[in-house]
Amino acid sequence: MEALLNAIQNYVLLSLKERELIKELFSEISVSKNTHLLEAGNICKYFYFIKKGLFRHYIDEQTIHFSCENSFMCDLTSFSTQTPSVKSFEALEDSVLFRISYNDLNEFRNKVKFGERFNRLVVEDAFNKTVLYIYALQKQTPAKRYETFLEQFRILSQRIPQYYIASYIGVTPQSLSRIRRRMIS
Image 1 (tube, one colour):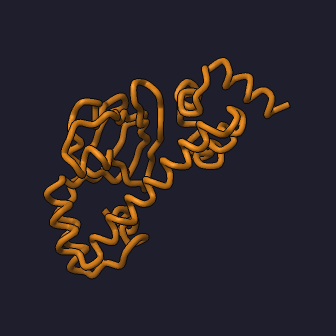
Image 2 (tube, rainbow, N blue to C red):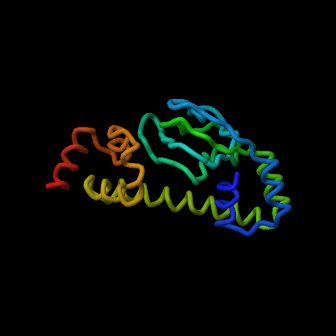
């Protein structure tokens, strides 16, 4: 729980009373490798914080993001509108998360002094990452996209199967192998 509290405090300050409220509102869950926390067509019912583990976000098998320890994870569009998601979240490792429901997050926003600010900053971070990813797909070469991937996820690159990395940068696994060989030589 301390990791979650610290992550929230990276955005906003919390009083002791607010820290206790957060401990009440978030619950801890464990999921096994290959478990889907969210499947396309279902409503995203929870906002997650990853304590341990690694997740792939994808749409129609196209990997669009990875989330790991000490990061928040949510399909913000589905969650905020309570409508079906177009995304899926798959655990690439056995994982432990904290989660909060839509109604409890509303309580958090109302009772935590800077709850609305926290919400806005998390949404801004997600928006900025999405824009940068779309830009990379549109304007960067596959080799540059792989370099960008390594800059963002270097620590994770050994934990993510190569075919998911290839999917993320928009190439076939064979093309990724060629890109990697060229970078080494």
